Length: 235
Image (cartoon, rainbow, N blue to C red):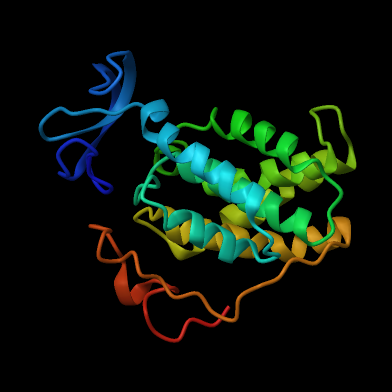
């Protein structure tokens, strides 16, 4: 299995304007999708994400860190986490929930992680371009929704969850494409750390700088045009 591009052959994925029906190369289930590689390989979101989910949960429950960037970066370093993919939607929420709990947030982390996995699992891969709403940004909103107990009928909490998503998506959009799941996870986390303190008075830690080492695996890396390309990367 490859960790970047097509998981089956490693070739670059191709995206189409309209969805078509295709069978997952791993599980055999049929889906509608806008993407596959030149050799017509397609891997569904479930097969793409499942190998990494257990590792994300296990790391979250064992970590004592108060820094969600550090937690997310170490999670992304696991072999089961691909360069890109919908597993990052759960990863960002799990990293934030873990740091929040370790910083004094009063949540049942195990229960919160289960909720985060269920909610983030409903966010398809590729929505950053197809829906104009990156899953990492939605992960920030899921995080705030969980810690505040927001529902569609909430008042203040409803606004807070949507504002967290908006802040995250703004920062992601300002940095432009093409997509990079690593970059967008970091941007989303940074956007919500201070907002979490405003909402809950819980202070999570921030790194002094973030320096990416994934650029060799990213066929569409922006290199010097990315905030986190290896150089001085102040927050």
